[in-house]
Length: 564
Image (cartoon, rainbow, N blue to C red; front, side, top):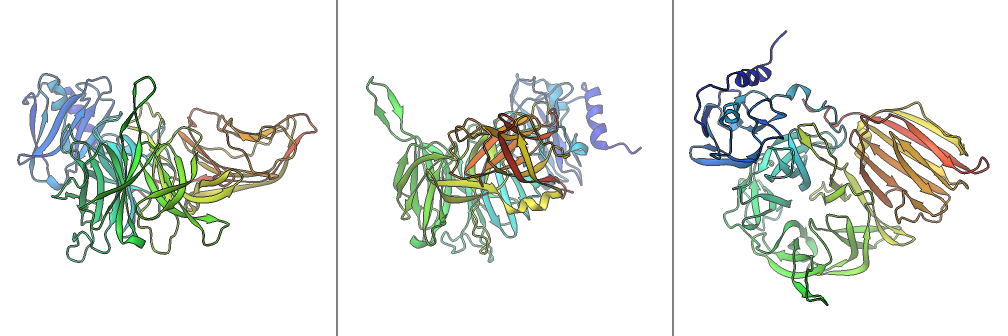
C-alpha cells in the first residue's frame, strides 16, 4: 500500500519533538510542488500570536491554538506562490510551547485531505470551508463566468477570529471549489470584516488596465475604515487601493451597487449612530443604516439614514408579483428584518414598516448577488447558517442554500419570499413521487425514502384536521389549522384550502419554505444521529382528515462532487 507523505511527516515530527529549532522562529524552505504550510491545532491550547513572513514582508498575521502534542486537526496557509523560496514563521515568545512550532511543515497536501468533504457532519448541499470557522457571506458577485462566494473566515481555528475573506467559486451556483484566502488582515489589530464586490463597467474609478475591469472588493478594515481592494485575475489575488480608506465612520459592512438612474454608486453602511437621552438619563444607541453616494467609488458623500437596523445592510429593488409595472425597494439587516419602500438614489422612503422573513433563528447576515448575467433578472441571496455547531470537526458553521427573493402581496402586506434557486435541480439524483394520501386520526404516511441530503416538496389540502405536518429525521414541522400558524410562529396562512411545505435537509441544517417562501425557517439539525425517517401526520379524531395531494422527494447529490 502506498504511504501518503501527508500522513507520514506529521507522525515523524510528533515523534521527533526534540529536533533542533529556534524556539520562536522557524525558516522553512518551500520545495517545488508544495502548496500547503501545515499547522497543528489543539482546541485545548491557549491562543498565541503568529505571523508568516517572506523577505521581511508579513504575508499573514493571526492567532492560533498551536498544538504541542497530538492535534485535534491540521490547518494550512497557501504557499504555492513561494515554491523554491524560504519563508519564516514566528510565534509570540513566552506563550507558545516550541514543540508546536517544530511541528509546522510544508507539503503537497494537508492531513485530513483524504477525507475532505466526507467528514461525519460535513454538509453536503450547504457550503462550508475546508478548515476553520466561517460566518457572513461577502462580496457575492458573478464575474467573468463564475459565481464568487467570499466569506468571513478564520482559517486557523474552530472559533470566530482572524477575520479573512475566504473565497470559493462555482460555474453553476451549486458545485463549489474553494480557493486560497482573498483578503488578509493587515495586523492583529486590523481585520477584514464584511463587505461587497462590484465591477465598474463604466470605468468611473479609472481602474481599468489592459482592457480588464477589475473585480473590486469593498470591505471594512477594522483599523482603517471602508476600503477598496482590486483583482485583475478573477479574484485570485487582490491589491489594496492606495487611497484607502474611502469612508471613515463608526460602523461597518458596506454594500455597494451602481444606481443607473442617477449614474452614481450607492453604499449602504451599518452605523452605530448617535445617542439620545432616555427618561432615566441612560444612553441608548440608535443603530441605523447610512446611505452614501459616489461618482467614482473613491469620493463618497453621506446622503441619508434609516434608524432601527443592525449590521450587514442590503438595499435592492424587486417587482411586486401580481402588479405589472410596479416595483418596490427592500432594505434589510443581518437579522432578516426588512422595510419596503421607495428609493431615489439618495434617500429611502418607508412605505411599509418592519417585517421579518426568517423564523428559525439560524439564518443571519445574508447578502444578494451583484452583476448577475444580463438575462438573469433574479435577486439571489445567500446567508450564514449560524449556530450550526459542528463539534469535533476541523470546520465550523456553513452557508444557507442559495435562494431567489420575490416580493409578494399577502394578507398582511408585501412580503419578502425566498425559495430555493432553480439550480437545485442539478443536485437531484433520484425523485420519488407520492399522491393523494388521506391522513386522518392516528393514520400516518411514511414514504420508503430516507437520507441525510433531501429536497422535499409536499402539497396539502388542509381538510379539517386541527393539525398536520411532517416529521423529518426527528424534526417536526406542524401547521395548526385551528390557530392558522406554523411551528408556533406568528405567520398567518392565507385564506386558502391549500398548504405547501418545501424542505432542504442536510447533515447539520434544515431549511423550510412555507407557501413558496411566505415563511422561511432555518434551524440546526443533527440528521446524522437522528432516525432517518419521513412521516406525514395529522392530529384529531378519525373523522378529521388532511389530504396529501402530492409529495416529491428528491435525493440530493453533493455540491462537492465536481471538486476534483
